[in-house]
Structure formats: C-alpha cells, structure tokens
Amino acid sequence: MLSLRSRVTTIVATVAALFFLLVAAGLAFVYSGMYDVSASSKDNPIMAKLLHDTYEASMHRHARSDVAPGDLLSFENIRSGAKMYDSSCALCHGAPDRPLSLIGQGIQPAAPSLLSASRRNKPELMFWTIKHGVNMTAMPSFGKTQSDQAIWQVAAFIYAERGISKDKYEQLVHRNAQVDNTGVALIGPKPEPGKE
Ligand code: HEC
Figure 1 (cartoon, rainbow, N blue to C red):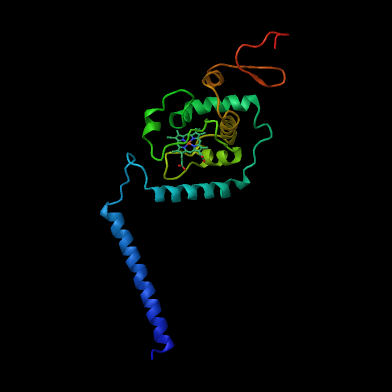
Figure 2: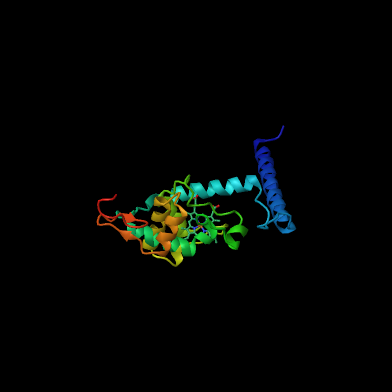
C-alpha cells in the first residue's frame, strides 16, 4: 500500500505535469500561427461571445461610480454631442441614411449602430465606454484627448436621439438650430405665433 505521503506526491506531480502540458500546448498554438487573426473573417462565435460578455461585465462594474451631470439632456449638450458624434464617431458607428465609411466597413468586430431606435444607450455606461475605449476592438479611448464634459455631451446625444431622422441629424450637426425660450430645440422652421 502506498503511504499517504507518496500518494500526495503523485497527485502533486500529476497536476504539475498537466499544468506544464497545458502551458506548452498553449504556447505551441500561439507560435504555430494557426489562429486566424485577420479582420476580414468573423471571430470564432465562442471567442466573440466570451469577449463580448467580458466587455459587458467590465463596463457594468467599472461604470458604477460615474454620475451624470444634472443638465445632461440640455439642448446645448445634445447639440455639442451631435457635432462631436459626426466628426469622430459616425465613421464607425454610422449616421442616418449615410453609407458607412471604409473604416467602419472594415473593422472586426463591427461597431454597433448607436443611433438605431432599438438601442438603450444608458448614459453612465456609454460615458465609461467612450472615455476608456474597448481593448482589442477598434473602439478608441476618448478620455485621452477629450474632457469629461465633451464625453457626457456625446453620451447625451446618443441617449436622447436614438432613432433620429436624417433631417434632424443634419440640422443638429450643421446648423445652429433655434431654441425656444424654454430651452427646447426647435428643429425645422419655427412655427408662426398662433399657428402651432
Ligand atoms: C475606429 C472605429 C470607432 C470609432 C471612431 C468610434 N468607435 Fe465606438 N465602438 C467601436 C467598436 C468596434 C465598438 C464595439 C466594441 C465591442 O465589440 O465591444 C464600439 C463600441 C462603442 C460603444 C459601446 C456600445 C455598447 O453597446 O456597449 C459606445 C457607447 C461607443 N462605441 C461610442 C462611441 C463614440 C461616442 C464615438 C465617438 C466619440 C466612437 N464610439 C467612436 C468602434 C469605434
């Protein structure tokens, strides 16, 4: 009969051998070049799901301490956010009725259509992602170059304007749309008094 001591030694030696085998197999896989890293083919679905779930959990955990400013949804914030969206985000995330840029078409994973009507775009979560970016994807960290205020503004825009029409988008981005005396945006010709 084996003594307890030699049994423990056998178990430890087997676990260590398995561990080294796994590490060796992992290294062999990495350096064999077998894994296809090209962006022209879709990610393996299991890998894509694992990476996406990791991202979701990380965002929910890390965004907990971000508190939106009280005037988040003011017209000025939304309009400034629209301008930033158009200059820095639309190339990957798209704009209403506009073909996606060559960059947006080429990245893998593709960027979600942030302005589609079915999105939720909770501002605190979006703020965190925009500020910090998403590692191993094309999503950049805008906190490296932009103030928190500018990032809240673009988060306000994508939250408030989900499902925005092409006309309203173009007006917010390109024209100084009018604001009535309650601070509410009036897109399009201002109604004449008494004709609303
Ligand atoms: C070069 C391409 C690129 C640019 C430019 C870019 N993004 Fe992204 N963005 C991505 C990709 C790709 C993802 C998806 C990351 C993933 O799969 O986890 C993403 C994800 C996001 C998400 C998370 C969406 C979600 O469902 O959780 C937000 C919010 C976002 N981007 C906002 C922005 C904003 C705002 C800008 C501009 C200030 C911007 N992005 C610019 C590529 C880009």
